[in-house]
Length: 76
Image 1 (cartoon, rainbow, N blue to C red):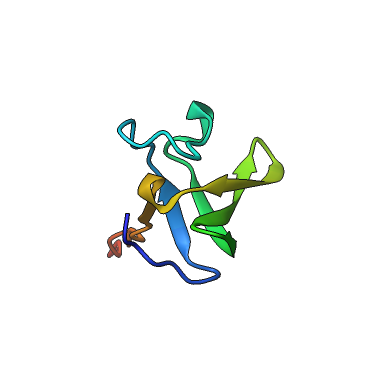
Image 2 (image 1 turned 45 degrees about the vertical axis):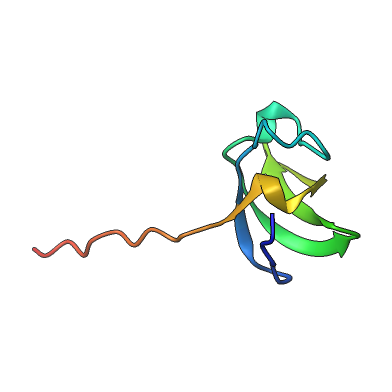
């Protein structure tokens, strides 16, 4: 809950059922989004939902920093 995020950080939405405040809809669980702002304790996250950009408000208890996966270089 004490996580701090900056604007343009990539985050993964992982719903924590023990904290119900500002819990996003379950369809957003596992989606990757971008932080676009802050509202009080919560963050505004921009996600792509089936081709549409949507902004949802999520408490930091439900967010986790996105760790980019680097694909191994294929040698020929």
